Length: 246
Image (cartoon, rainbow, N blue to C red; front, top):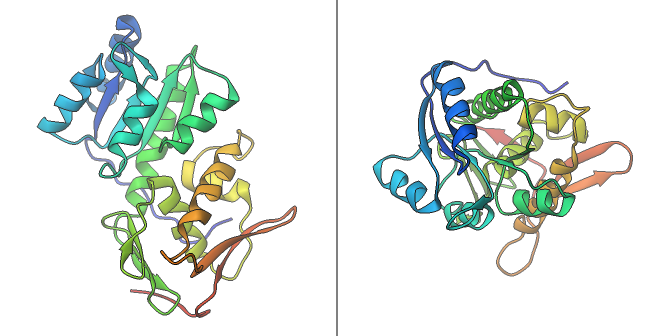
């Protein structure tokens, strides 16, 4: 089990619900609001963009096939600045679509038909994990790798690595557990807060993307995520093996 878990403190979260099927949108909105969430419901990407101008949500539930474009492309568009979780909710169930959504910056992927209780449980899990990483600042590799939990940003030699939220959380946890092998199941349970028996392919996708970003601009690696066959992953620091938290 991973160490140093923190409890999640409930506050009113703002959820952007982007869904063009009116019945699904209305039902999800009703269920979320009944549990204390503030919900902005939109049916197009244009409405989603205008909603962002009025206020940035904590989490987005996003359909893929929308009247004015693709939810996957919209996810790519917002990911440079938006640090909150994005959960795709769509009828597209092929593995290639799931991988595409995760690589675009999605944190989770649910297919229709679905159980609303599972949707809400996943939303709660993502928000709980988002809170965990908001305070700590951690450094490694002689200060060349710098993680700021308050902003959910990581820096390599002073350059923003532009990590997606789940990439940041995986790196943070591997740094927190430095010196030990962490299984894919442990990462899935800690970052997604779901049973490790669920589909953990999403962990592999995020680690693959994260490894590409652990290089300097000249291609030299400061750190790497090393796979230990049949065991899991550990963080390797090439500049120094010293790690400290501030």
